[in-house]
Image (cartoon, rainbow over all chains, first blue to last red; front, side, top):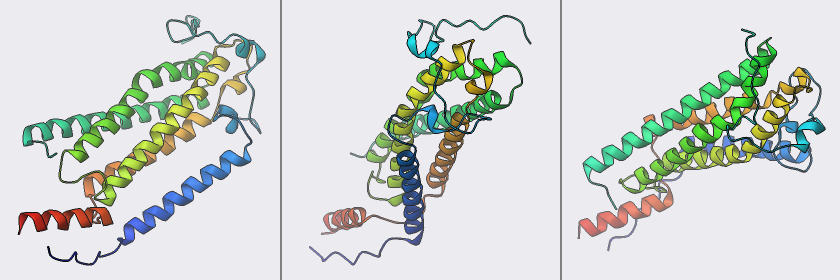
Length: 81
Length: 173
């Protein structure tokens, strides 16, 4: 069997792409670590118009039984539009 | 195992359909997120965050898995392979990455819906920039994956290079 020709090397676009991907993943890891322990929740991103994260009101964290409709039994009020 | 042409076309159609469907669903989520952030109407804002979770379970998650699965079948059933070309490898890694992020994010959808459904929760508390950020990033990743799939930039991995020459050696004794 003939010898394997030398590998031509990794293309430049792959190197650029790899570096960009690494930077993005590192940024995400840093963001996750600096925002403290816990799951990936909405508190990690500031709600619109406020300075920091938020905790759901106790009334919603106490009762988290999903409804069969998938909309938590919530009916949007009629009208309004 | 290389698929026969008819099966390959079917697999390709399934992969393109599910991936484009996934991209379209992400665009819809981006629109929902923008509506949730900007609408002056309280019912519309709460409704936007309320529909995100069931829609994600019914549309985003199935499409993500379907795209991933059909992509793997497409790669393994053709001469492209899964680990032979960098563009295929990058597409696989990107699809895996955003699918994992999506699955982790399902809990966030749930918490946001809990807040939205509570009539005592202030509207400023209901509004959340997180879905817009995630949808925008997912859209960017999916667009990059689409560009890679269309342009198929050159570049073989070491594994692909070795396999290609092994096959040539076998076919040309």
